[in-house]
Length: 411
Image 1 (cartoon, one colour):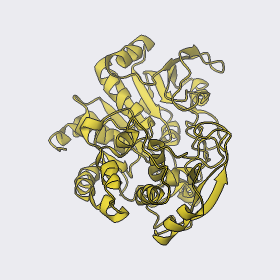
Image 2 (image 1 turned 180 degrees about the vertical axis):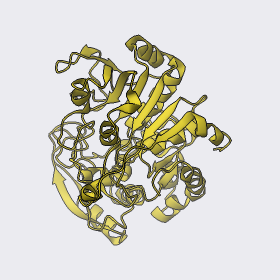
Image 3 (image 1 turned 45 degrees about the vertical axis):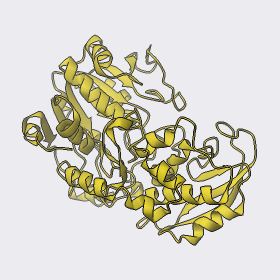
């Protein structure tokens, strides 16, 4: 990673300063205001005279759970011309790995364009065909490198630059805090849509901060970027400090508790164990046929900070082991302040392999795409323990943390 392009940020990127909240409002949850709330409070001045398109999904909501597309469409101060839908779709009707396609939104009549798995010139052509001048991004992220919305952000920034469009990011909280980056950093040769560029597995950034990082470090040419920051957010805040409603960003991210464990337990997508899809507790319930109480016992013996494991049995309604009762663990976080989701995910992989003879990686080595290299898989296969695996990525993580600091908007 290099920092040679930081000087471009002074002209290519602007962090928009909008009016502060009142003292009375600040007493309510420090009255956090999202980027959209601050944009609206300023009368949408940032979008004045612009034909606007917005990249969003069901999480693009106001505090009273109205969708911002509906709000902006009804406001004569905004010339909203198009919506761009990511994975799962703009209105959220599609499951994992799906999208809604191209259609006219029944509520507003606006054209909805499908961006899922589109990038580069084909995506730039969509922006051009839509007739918009400015592309706005407002989607709730969950803080993990392999959660695809941040790569939708990256792809849309790149495409907007190719199409000669302006790009505006409306910021929202990282629901699992922005305290620190954790986990391995992606190696470029393992880049996919679950990791386009070398960032940490749990990046500890907001989408606006990531946009600044992408613009300064990774895009071939920077896009004209503006970020509308939040007010009232602290890096130590979990989602419940925001006072905002939780809208599931995807069908298998039902609660903030799911987001808390996701950057670690999503690694089980790279194994033959269930990661809990098809249950009411995805990514908190993990298991397979033939696993019993020994896994929870082995995991609890590690005394990992902030978390305990319960022997659990469940029958997924879809995905792996559909309709079959399997055994495993439920992850119970009792002190989120000290909980490390990535170390926990590695510990669960190590102990699962130790106690269950049926343990196997997915044949396509998907685990390498999730962790960002072959190192985690090969170390675990060689018998490394949790501490040894975690030690393997510390130097690259330190380097990423140094770069990350340059792009943080909230100190």
